[in-house]
Length: 457
Ligand code: ARG
Image (cartoon, rainbow, N blue to C red; front, side, top):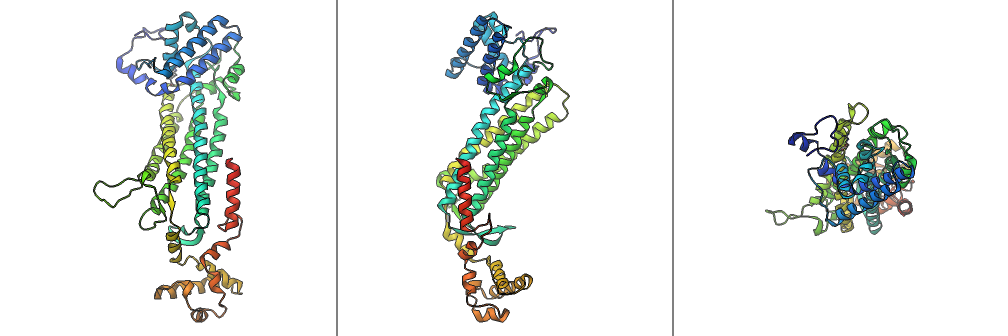
């Protein structure tokens, strides 16, 4: 078939070359944006007297018809078309004739694809922001539900100090809040209009780029036409935001996997979000959490792919840039599918404060509190640290815990220990005494919940 771009060549290309060149299999998802962008372009051309009002009206109603027919399934996307831009223009011209042929005045596919991509990603970024918000809310609700559950906090995956389970959950909420901020900031740079940059150098027609940008809801226009058609920073940036978000999800899922194992049993994932084994009847596997962790790899891969594609490209447009869409769409789809599972999985998760408490009771995680107690009794911290260590060793040898080591035995280690030591090393007290701002104490946890609630509303 003769190509729309048939100019100096005869437009006859090899079938394999056509297939290789074509992007319609993946860029057809931008059909709404392509149509909206073209309608705004026609409106601008008419306002500027570049095409007639009648032509603009015919173009706009033709485009509306195409949109309606695509939405209803009446019009099928032609997989043999080179890309979605060519497809829409071709159908339009079939339907309305010469007016359709005037649409591509004062633009190029180079600024058109940049426009469509930005419009599409603007919508996806909004959808992603609201998903992260729902995820943060789901975690926040769990934190409130289990606000007073005590668990061991870990460093090096070794029991370290007693903390509130809610405090640990709120740490993830803080991460999600930054993810929302990052995505919102990225959106500001996505929301700049490249249309009117044309092939690379701007145009001889008296266009009004700002009017067209305004029609499409952009907050500004790209101020350099070469940059307008060459810039894909916004896509790299979005992949960066998604990589960090996915890293947070992955760490959280890693903990869910650990916590739901028999070794921990701190949580139970609902049956709806676990799977059985085909051979071991007792198994309940956290497949969803594992898959979320697993999909993180492909999102990082998409970021690397796009960075690498762009790194050696001379200005302005190069066909290599067509590769941007598959990478970004893959990442956006992956993150959305993860979020859509993660949110209900968290909502349906049950915590086991009883098991958390038993784990907290074995592991000497109140040893720091014993040392702090001795400091308050007048011992220098280093000496107190040593005494507390000796007390732990004594307990370990005889299978006891600090809470039931008799006072006489404490006194053998240090004369300063009194009967009040037991209250001081009681686990909930250890938590309550963490009064520093941002610590695990209940007041701090309340303050965090209040802060997150107001930031998320
Ligand atoms: N399908 C192309 C892409 O996705 C559209 C732009 C093509 N421009 C060109 N001059 N070949 O990047």
